[in-house]
Length: 435
View 1 (tube, rainbow, N blue to C red):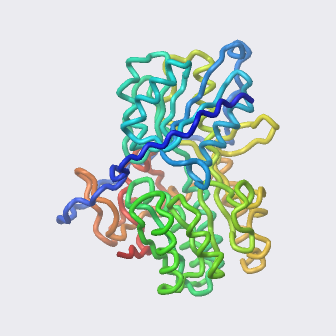
View 2: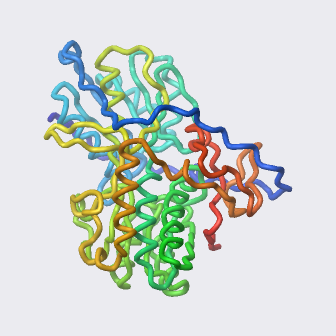
């Protein structure tokens, strides 16, 4: 593995561009039907094809521009691990990174790195990755890529990507719903966005399925910090959720370790995001962390790298991969795009040994069953369940928040990837958004 570590360049950028204000409240028209995915034959687990021998002699440099620091974060930490795993798999691929890159620095850094030989440049957040599309035509032989938050703009060599994290979040929700004794679960979240709302929806559906199976009345409280990485604000919110709202299970849609710290200090269960924080970071232990979901961005990067090495001039421009898609690591491990993971164990084995005896067998069996079905492409929580609006969320241009109680999508119909990635703008019924 060849990894050229460039010095950390701190760029102070006002990240207020992340915050999207809700549009003024206005009468909500009848919701437009959610576009349905076309029926397809039952999928089987897919794995990106191994690189062709002809591509072996071609070399590439993969650059990831991280919007935040890497150390101590789950989001950029997972992207950094992905870059390293790609470099481990391909001796002819070098991984280079920059940290704390804002939207004003994304293009200058990219051009500097392209001059040094970069062939694939990724922005690991939408707000600072989108500017890369402006230079895509200038460098026709370079692949550019950006994470999707809600914008789906593409070009021939400007790729958009996101994993179906909601699948693993659904499994986490089943576990969290089984663990709560107070019936109160808390979410420390960043700010309303399609990405955040979609992920929280996956967790909510899992909690609600567990509640129905176990005959529980469970409330899900969500409070926004205002940004992705605000350690003190995240700590204050987590403490408020425990002290005032009596939550005994906490999860997060933010990036610092503060909510985990509070969970450990106050003796409540924590459910992690983006990485196996116990196994890879050594944060806390399975006495506090009931389970995490682990995102393997390398599965998506692997598709991009292989297409570039093969000389593909028209790569796939929207990658939205789930548990049915896999990659083989350098050590032979086959891993899906997302999975539940804890202390380097996966599936039901990832459930904390301390938590496992507290979870009824029917829930453990359901976690195993749904995980297996999703890996085979046979079941998906967003297809199975109806989407009922909570009346809260994020008003988008031309797309107001559906009124509370509105059935936006019926059960049994698969929404399109485009709708999930760019138009899922309402919280599901059953969540309480705290001011």
